[in-house]
Image (cartoon, rainbow, N blue to C red):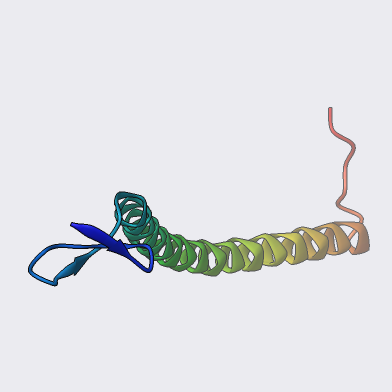
Length: 87
């Protein structure tokens, strides 16, 4: 084998990667695979957060309805002079 432009060339004329380049390619491959997995996990997380946001809107709606109901009850009790101090 002899060296040509930073690559090892076998006697048959086939060029192969240097050990350093091979190691870098392995690392890059692992990085790409991990980034793809991370992207998939983030997509799942985003979908879950969207579902949580929808449920939060429902909870907020019920809380607002209860607040309005409570306000209406208080107004009615005061208007009819039926409001009593807690004993």
